Amino acid sequence: MAIEDLANCHPKLIRGQVWCHECGNTQKVNSGNALANGWPKCCGYTMSLDSPEERAHFEQVQAADESDPMRTY
Image (tube, rainbow, N blue to C red; front, side, top):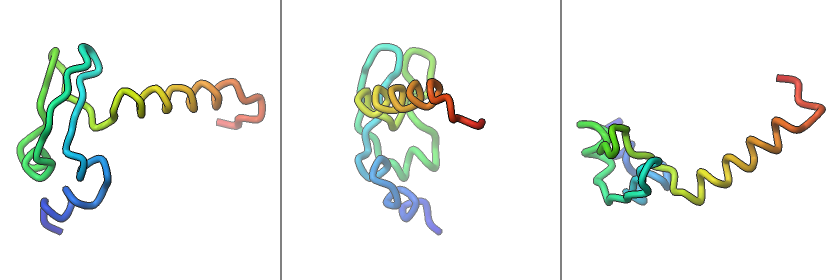
C-alpha cells in the first residue's frame, strides 16, 4: 500500500491537522508527507492528530472506565 493510500485511510489523517498538547498551537499538514518524513514538532514534542475536544472526550471515557468496579483489567 502506498503512503498516499495510507494518508487517506483514516478521518484524522484525511483532516490533515495536528495540535500541540502543550501550547494548543495547530498546523495543517500533508499526512502523506508527514507519514513519510515525520510529523511536525512543537514545544519539543511531536504534534498530535487528536484535537483538544477529542482528547477531552478520551480523558472522560478513560476516567469512567477507571471508576468502573466491574473492570477486570
